[in-house]
Every structure is written in C-alpha cells, then in structure tokens.
Image: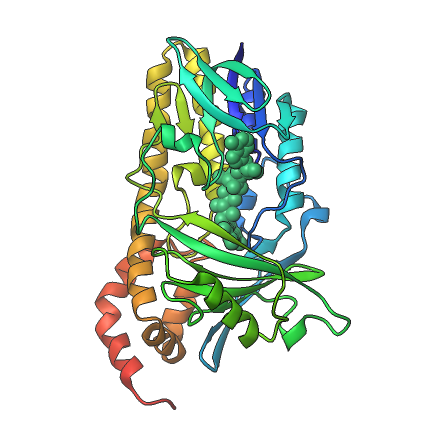
Length: 384
Ligand SMILES: Cc1cc2nc3c(=O)[nH]c(=O)nc-3n(C[C@H](O)[C@H](O)[C@H](O)COP(=O)(O)OP(=O)(O)OC[C@H]3O[C@@H](n4cnc5c(N)ncnc54)[C@H](O)[C@@H]3O)c2cc1C
C-alpha cells in the first residue's frame, strides 16, 4: 500500500506529488494520457505561478516573456506596459511534462496512460480502480482537472453559473509572422468577443493561442462565437479547435471527503474574472501534498485534512469572491468600463495590475466603489 495516490498529471497533481515525496511519502501519480499531452490553454503563466515553483523556470520553457497587454473593444485598443515581466507564455504540453518529471525526480511513481475509474473508501485506506488494476493508498488526491468524474464522488456536479466554457485553437506562424498582423510579444484581450468573458490572442513563440471563454455561465453556441472571432482576427477558418469547461468561483465547494482531497480545477480553483488557473492549481496541489504529509506523519489525519480545507478557504475565498464581483460588474458593462479606462488613466493602470497579482481584487474593489459615480459620468461623455 502507498501513502498517497494521486489522479491527474496536470499542475495540481504534479505539485501534490512532488510535495508529498519531498516530505518522505510514497506516492503514485496516475495520468490517463501519455506525456507530454495536449491541454487546451492560453498558456499564460503568471508571476504567482512562477513563484510556486521551487526552482527558477527553465529557459527552454519560456516561449516569450510579456510586460504589457493590449485590450480591445470594438475598433478601439488600449495598451499598457509595466516595464517589467508580468507573465510568461508557455506551452502546456512542455510545462506540465516538466512538472511531472520534477515530481518523478522527487520519488513519485508515474503511471501514464492509465485512467482512474472510481475509488472506494475503507477504514484506513482508499482503494482506487483504474483501467489496468486496483491500487491501495492511505490517502487520495483527486487532481483530474475540470472534466473528470472522480470529483463527483466527493462533491456535487457544478450547477449553472459555477462553470464557464472556452473554445481555443493554436494558430501557427506563417512566413510573414502571425496571420492578421497580431502582436508576437503582447497578449491581446477582446472584451467584446463573448458575453460574460473575453476573446484572446496570446503569443506563443512559433504560434499563438486564440480563443473565446466565458466565466459567468454556459452561453449558447460557443463554437459559433469562436468562428466569428477567428474571422474578425483574420485567422483561417477551420483550424482545429477544442472546447473545454472552466470551473469558476473556487469557493463554497466541498474540498474533502474522508481520506480524499480535491485540488486544482477539480476543486474549482479558477479565477472567475480572468480564468487564470495554473497558479491556483500549483498552490492547491502543494497544499494538498503538505496536508497528506502532515496527516500521515502527525498521527491525526482528520485534523490535518481539515486544515487543508481551511487553508484553501483562507487563501482563495476572499480573492475569488471579490474577483466574482469584479467579473459580474465588468462583464455586464464591458463597454462602459472600457470607456472609463480610456478616460481615466488611474483606473486603467490599477486594473492592469490585477493580472500581475500586484493589486488584489479586494483592494481594487474597495478603491473602485467610491469612485464609480465619477467614472460612470466620465464614460457617458461623448468621445474626444
Ligand atoms: C481554454 C482554456 C484556456 C486557459 N488559459 C489559461 C491561461 O492562459 N493561464 C492560466 O493560468 N490558466 C488558464 N486556464 C486554466 C488552466 O488550464 C487550469 O486551471 C489548469 O490546467 C488546472 O490544472 P489541474 O492540474 O487542476 O488540471 P489539468 O491541467 O486539467 O490536469 C488534469 C490532468 O488529469 C488527467 N486526468 C483526468 N481524468 C483522469 C483520470 N480519470 N485518470 C487519470 N488522469 C486523469 C488529465 O489528462 C490531465 O492531464 C485555461 C483553461 C482553458 C480551458
């Protein structure tokens, strides 16, 4: 019997495995795909994500480092530059593979190409059934992403408003650069591309990630919206695309049942405004690894696992609740916000620092609320 079994070789599972192994536990990580595997993603890794790694991000993983953003609404674009790195663009196939290799280096046993099907809890152990066999562990971490089935044995399925959807494609570079003349160094965000979310074109070295995503529910016909977005960006129609579910809101969900913990997307830890999830997957995975080690080394497993829940709530609940308020305000009135940004540089500069995690959502909201009337009036003024 192993100390811990982990389902999912994404950032959450790899971080949980590495942390558990570094703390002396025996662990097996199950990944249904053979690595490196493709993961639909914009590939934007925030500074908070980089800080979660316990070594500098290797150079070969950096497709490009970005210091600014281009925000688009209608025919209008606003640009901001921090003059320092605010995010690093990565390929998820390479990045996630690197994370799993680090977990294996720390001592985790990797079973790739093996799908977990279900688990049963016994008094002192969890029995995991996969498509190749049955395994026993003292604890189980479910880090299977947003579309897995095991999390449903722990918590209920997400209702409407608790998840969004995204459609994404990789657009290769042509001889003249990116088709449509898009920036090769600056991420573009289109706030009018999809109700309740945005469209994006993120540079990725020899290609870019283009997609639309909504974080406030499941809109009708997302693929049709995506095709219109490709057309608007002057990208070729018919590029292969993938749809994906994005859990949002990361609070108020059950995170644990008995000897089983949820981490990453399986726990719902995605920023409900930006859709950022990699840094939260890394963080929650690491906290899960710490918790299982405390549970098995400290002799009071129930208490240590409860601490995991408490710790996640303490770290993520307020930021995600505030982010959800920003999301509800912003995506309801994106045009108004965009005009207010255009006319109030202090507002724009503060907003621009949110994705960098330099301005927390709560601080942004507290700062914004008394100023809303002023910005509202400024947004009603006719254009200059
Ligand atoms: C279109 C899109 C764009 C995004 N862009 C960004 C971005 O730019 N920046 C950002 O920070 N976040 C982004 N996100 C969010 C981010 O991708 C997720 O939050 C993050 O991948 C969560 O990591 P995870 O480890 O929890 O899950 P995943 O990365 O989904 O990993 C789960 C793993 O579990 C495996 N698995 C599933 N079921 C089983 C099973 N039964 N048995 C064994 N293995 C299983 C899967 O194959 C997968 O490898 C985006 C999401 C989407 C959908």
